[in-house]
Image (cartoon, rainbow, N blue to C red; front, side, top):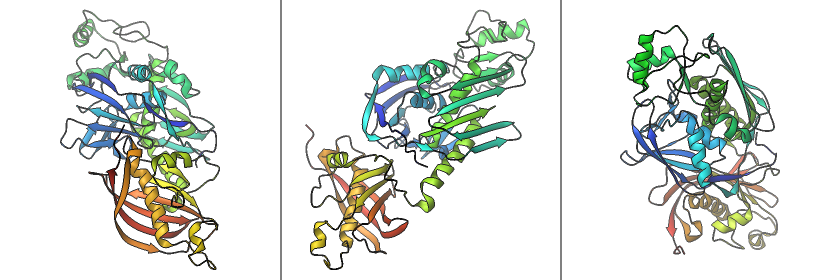
Length: 472
């Protein structure tokens, strides 16, 4: 269900951020640039080192591996260890960003989200002229993995909260819990918390050359068994230290704990990062017992399915007049060149990188009713298609930084069918979906006009984005 509580605007970065570092598992040195993006763009990664510079969206549908972090792959682009950066973006309030990479893995930095969040705060975030639509749940959503004894549940709540419990049956680590009461606490309480592993895992990773990052002083190492001086000496070499020892808390002394329950707090950080892959901002209380990347991703899939099912029953957009629009009429007027009597969209209620939904309220005062069957007013079919094209123009022009300098011209209309009359008093729900990525300004879309839950009109449309005015 879409939330009808108070809504924030969407946000992007004020300017690009460049971060360089080494991938923990691949050992690859990666240059990463975070770039501002338009409303509805979401979070996407782009491998600029590969042919055609493919893009992969931060979406649970593209997760291909959760063995030692969360890995995405799509369009030939593979990006590993995305969770700490995603958590920083959620914690920093960044909704729309393009992340360019010249390598296969996000830099590990110190193993936490803090370096990313500090970089975001250094440039600042930009308020965008589009509403951020949160999705609330109205029932408990549960996930359980009996083999791993993992239990996760999302409870209805008025904001986004997370509670995390860990228990590794380890006398050293014991049972820990962490709690995030609101995203305003993320920077101080969660972002600094680094990844951790057990000694036996570390030895396996080192011996199998699975952490090629060289400097591995970015993880808390929990010593879960007796360890000899010879082993400590060998680890010291791996850690690039003269000597290494076990602290009283059962933690190797390569780093100091930032919180007594830093491991539990980091698991909470991972939950936030992985649940960002739902693709929708949510309001719920997440309780995670013994979470891991695999269970986080499966839980994210379950929540996404729930939202999609309730958001579009049978793929029909739901129009709730109480919901603030993503773009109101003033924002529509900034983008489209149309004016009275030919502006046929009142507001935009949904906008993503591939879909837009607009609203046109039809009244008896429409000028075309004076001459189009005045005694039996019916909205002309060509104007219904025009309304669709204008909504589609909002999606197309949202892909350019200065939409006021561009127009969209339609090149082709195929498979157009009129199934139901549109009459005064009707509310047209105008949905346009991209059929393929926009290339060289060519936009292929499928349009549908709904009146309530019935299809009134549908058509396949092709348009071209053309620059008509010079930027000043």
